[in-house]
Image (cartoon, rainbow, N blue to C red):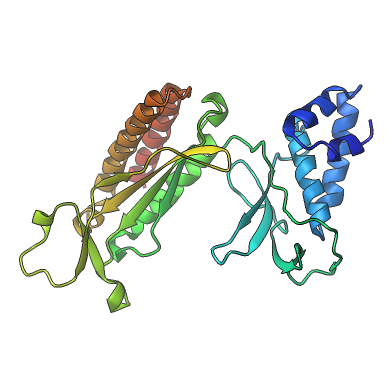
Length: 300
């Protein structure tokens, strides 16, 4: 089978059809793997777009046992510049795979790259059939009170456990993820203008309190939204100074309860939208991971 039929396929349906017509699937997989290795150190937008198509094809036919499955993603940094990278199901970026791009007329070239050829390609390809990944994604605010450091470290460990051990391939493809943003008070920030606390109710603010503060609910949930074909939910958990000063074991037990509240919230939202997703299995896996997380931390 000629690889031209892979590169010329415009939709995932066409790509799947081209793969299905291959007489010997193992031979096609070996050809695709060879192309993957050839394109891994891509030097221009043409090679990047071909690499994306190869990763999409391998996601359909199967990566085999010799390679770790990855997804080829093009996105923008906070400054608006494009970057491209290969990453695994646990969000690990493959070494030397991330490159930044500069605008060249109506196309792009790699920052400090050796190839400045204009290939007539105006848009980046980005993989459409993404790997199933952990649907419970913990993110924290950049600033936080110093007393919360042990809890911050523990949350990072929990995120790694969720990324590694959730069985997202069993839950379904109709929902992608819930982003759980943990925002902390930081009354002791080194920069005085950045010092403030969260309170959940106006009545919780002490009389005569002079430092900056915000009244924020314990949980702030947005609506289900779709971005780049992925259905997601964003939830923010605001921590008061007092919550940030609790012993680690109490913070973990509290967060365990918080996670189950968020799962129940997601379950109800998906039910109302009639979205088919195995929340029962997700909850079962989450409980097992949370139990090991709290037991491990308390045993140290």
